[in-house]
Amino acid sequence: MSAQEKRVMALCEWEDRWQTGRTGFHQPQVHKFLKKYLDKILHGQKSIRFFFPLCGKAVDMKWLADMGHTVTGVEISEKGIKQFFEDQSLRYSEEQVPEIPGAKVFKSADGKISIYQCDLYKFSSAIAGKFGGIWDRGAMVAINPCDRQKYAALLTSLMESDCRYLIDTLEYNPEQYKGPPFLVTEDVLKQLFEGACDIELLQTADGFEERHRAWGIDNLTEKVYLLTPKKQ
Ligand code: SAH
Image 1 (tube, protein in one colour):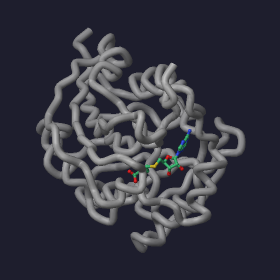
Image 2 (cartoon, helix red, strand yellow):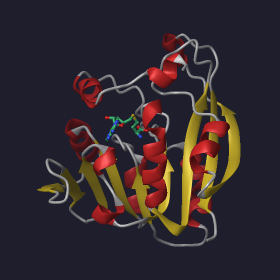
Image 3 (tube, protein in one colour):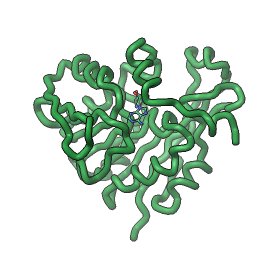
Image 4 (cartoon, protein in one colour):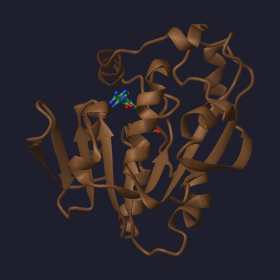
């Protein structure tokens, strides 16, 4: 087993990152690949239900809601969720989720954005139904490698039959950095999703930024794929 496969980040370590402001993964602008490939996700539909696994405070959620879509996110950090609503100047309510002990849901006043504060693996389609679109940035690459099967099974179970799942992955030399984010190759995606979905590589780009030098890597490739459920 490689060092990355063995690495496990506990939920409290993520919370600690939020508490100490170590959230370098957050981007202040809408992600360029979400913008570029939004039409592929929508495939002609005007307004769909989006799912954001491990959403953090991604500004992309507000961008989609402003276009008339509804967005459901799951994030463990209450601090991150509150920052999202505050940064976006959105009024929100907070309530318990009876189906998930200890979980809360934070909803924008207009009802367009709901963020569940819980461990992703406690979430299911029984809580908020299925989705027409999924935007996976900093999610598949952030989960512990040992949880990948569980993650793929959950995400697959949340897809409507005409869902489009856009996923942003990273490739770099895993000997140089332990993650997260972890290396996720096309082979990994195939192992996890090929039974349920067609997988199309949309774009390969140089994703290296100066901040990545601190990880000890000198090279980072970003790849974006579109997953479409196989016809039954
Ligand atoms: N998608 C966001 C955040 C990426 S970082 C973005 O692109 O900015 C990963 C996020 O997942 C962190 O905010 C962390 O708090 C959260 N997280 C990690 N494991 C989780 C889990 N098992 N359940 C819910 N949230 C989790």
